Length: 430
Image (cartoon, rainbow, N blue to C red; front, side, top):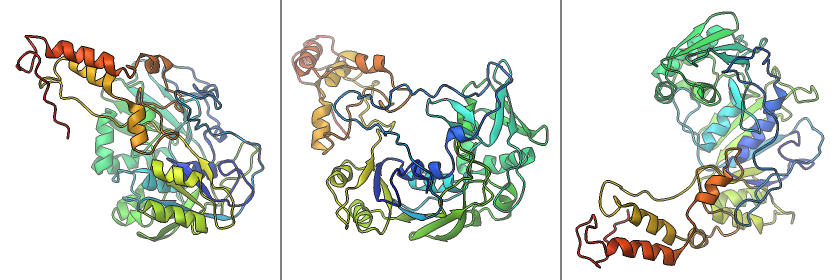
């Protein structure tokens, strides 16, 4: 594999926080910038290349002392080799229109399927299998031109009709139908050999985001899907960097290099670099880490703070360090108040309990000190959508201040829960 994702000579053992296999497969299939976009037609709804400057610089440290930035290193692409990735579960399925995916499933899918649009490092949506994407003034009609010369794994050429023929299959799928409704997508038409027109029921300036992920934006061969919808998970057909080779459920799924893949790296070298990539479901965290240390798998992914901590201190069977790519994901754990029921219908109670909650103590209790950051918003400091203003505005831990606010509510004769002045609030957590 080229050392764009795994930046040391040979196949070393790595642990990554969150989408490790996504990083690996993405590098094998070419990054966003390896697919040049034709953005010459300027309209208000055009998807175009953005500046390659992330909102948070690679070396910046955000709140707390956890630095999860991935540093870029100079390297030379190396062809050949195979890699085995330990994942936490078997894929739900490999049908983009039907199966709702978590990381293991999604990482398999992006090995075999390309997307019409990708997100670049700046968080901007740029054409990928598409060559251009523009909208009318009210964002109700989007016109996409496909990249020419792309073929599916079964040799069928990718055309606008392929995208149009995908639509009824997507409409009938569990994942597809809900995504289509959410995107307000009404029709998909082939209006030229490589031109696709999407019509929405109402204006949607964010529609390119729907084309950057499954189920709408992930391209599969519609004739193969229609011929055997159930069997498609065992023999998926896409345009991606890898082709399905074998699928042994709950044991191992292997993809081999697509020698006809259309994408190249920035130097014009054909992608992918790897000969093959395998995914092995290993649900138990400790067993998966042991498999990494023993060399049974070459890489793994995990969401568990304890596993990250163990991996930081681990050595493989040769005494070498484990290489970690840690990334703060865009996901925040928390609780919700039922604001329709006393006492949480009073903002003072909600504000008081927020001030009285020490996220640092919760993180410490969960074993995440030095790994996880306190949450102030849905996005992490690693995200281009991270907002410093939101982080600064988030209520700070102030136990005494929270007690004072709560006391004000408790001593209010008109408190919403109807209890006597001075009586404690009654809260049930579940």
